[in-house]
Length: 115
Picture 1 (cartoon, rainbow, N blue to C red):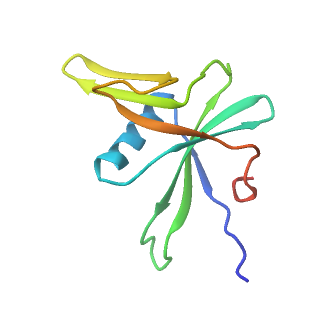
Picture 2 (cartoon, one colour):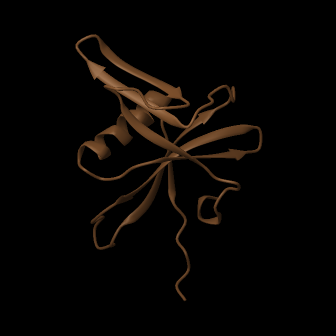
C-alpha cells in the first residue's frame, strides 16, 4: 500500500482569509466545509485542498488553516457576505439569508496526515 502523504500546511492571517477562500471554492460549485480540531491549547480551523498539476506530480495536498488562540469562536457555520458596504464574516450557530454558509465539521482528533 502506498504511504499516505502529509499535507503542506499554509497558515492564513485571519479567519476572514479562510472564509474568503472557502467562499471562492463554493462559488465554483464545489461543496466545501471547514474542519475544526484542537492542537494543544489552540483551536485550528482548516480548509483541505489540492494544488493540481504541480510540475509532474498529480497533486499536492494542502491545508489552509487559521489558529484561534482565544478559543472564543463558537458555532456550526462560518458566514460570509460581501456587498457594497464591505465584507462581513462571522461564526454562527445557524445560517442567515444573504450569506454564504460554510459548515464547520468538528473532528474528535487531529488526523494523522495533518501531523
